[in-house]
Length: 529
Image 1 (cartoon, one colour):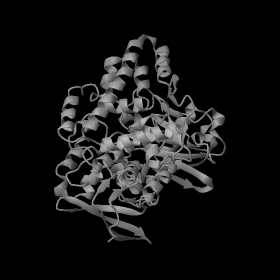
Image 2 (image 1 turned 90 degrees about the vertical axis):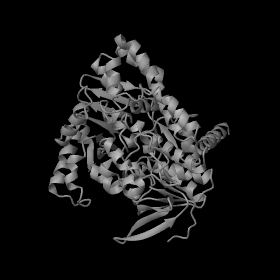
Image 3 (image 1 turned 30 degrees about the vertical axis):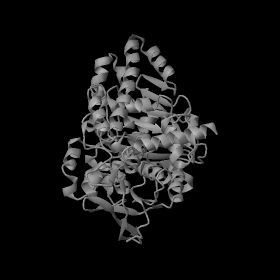
Image 4 (image 1 turned 135 degrees about the horizontal axis):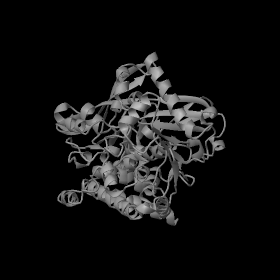
């Protein structure tokens, strides 16, 4: 048993947990204990390294809404005390590649809209309407989630009011596209970034698409020093208030007494053995995801029917990532650090992508170059991402890391070759530059992050997800709050805002307003100094 010197415990060290802990430390003067099951802090914001200085990101490929004066910049500046430096990506920062054309996207909304009209002049009116609808849906989402953070009767009343305008944001993305556009190439182009939230247009809520699309209207940014610099900058803020960040602590359950969270029980991996530890605190914030929290960390009688409701949302998206390094700069092939989205056809069909990817014939991928975005990088690297189904990997789920057998390794080799072939067809010479490669599957995510079925995006962003009254920061257990992407939106900033929401809920009825006021005021002072 610990000495009880902490005011709060955060489960996990993803950006949601770190954000919540830093706000409680700065604004609430709370001593927060952050517990991470992996050997490094950061969750999906951490980096991993291999020999000769090779480094890759596991989740942070780029972040939007970080221009000066933006909410995103204000949040990250506050929780890191200005310790994170952001490098704006080169322009164009996105390139959508299709069989018979490619399209460059600049971090300027007016130019993006004008370029679309220039390419598809017959769809001008629909394009103009589309940008208005994106903002309408995103604004609805902000009102919807803010309502869930406000006390009664204000919050419930606001959510009831917003329900009358939910038709657009909670429509299926494909249905919206079919209703508003005629050209199949334009329909495909507008949702090229669907892998940013994990669901293709035939499953996703238009809200999920709108949040991502508006998030990047002002371009993309990348942390100087790589994704690992985020946790390295936030941890001192937490520790400076008397808190602590501890790794290799796998939280097994939340301790509940008389309906109130009082701490956690942890397996501490050391010397090849697990030692059980208990930590107590009057406040617990879970960044382990809604699924893990309700199905693994809480007793069944306290979780109620939530586990069944989570299952009813359908399978959460996962990913396979191929990490490569180069013998010389990929700039030789014309890359400048922009994101490359390759699609072999105009139908962003998840089932087809899953089947083709497993055969080594992916129908599309996302390509990122962390070394070209980071001025401090010393070795050139890239990451290729595809989204297959989880089921084909399930047969090896009960085997330990690096001991899954020849068939599993053959599958990984086939997928890696297919992903490299796909990129090389569109950018000849790519394969010849590679001097190292390593593939990560959904089982890797399960092993290192503890997310079931390798769910790197959290709960799927379907219309039904956003209709769930139970899904939010608060839980049936007093003083237990959820943080991260499941309670707000997908992506790095979405998960961070989930952390702001959790900290706000812990600070009292209007804590979210209080937290955002402090964040905004601090940012204004920083800009004027």
